[in-house]
Image (cartoon, rainbow, N blue to C red):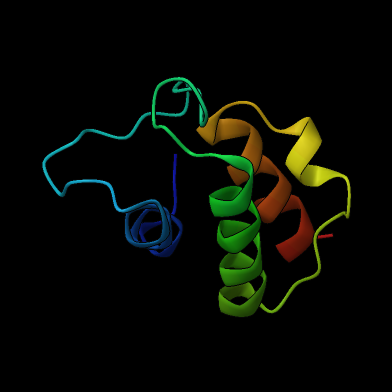
Length: 78
């Protein structure tokens, strides 16, 4: 289950419409249209919001919304 803050940041940074359902299975690139620059911006915003530091190679490793959420949640609760 996605965190409300996580979803709000995802929608804001990726400029996703409010009425677009977000699911963990969605591919960040092909389904949500998030390119590498937007993904980096998204990671920076998530790090700031949650007060964590995510792996440098994260942008190459995540494919889905759930992949990204799991990385954030792991960083928050080590």
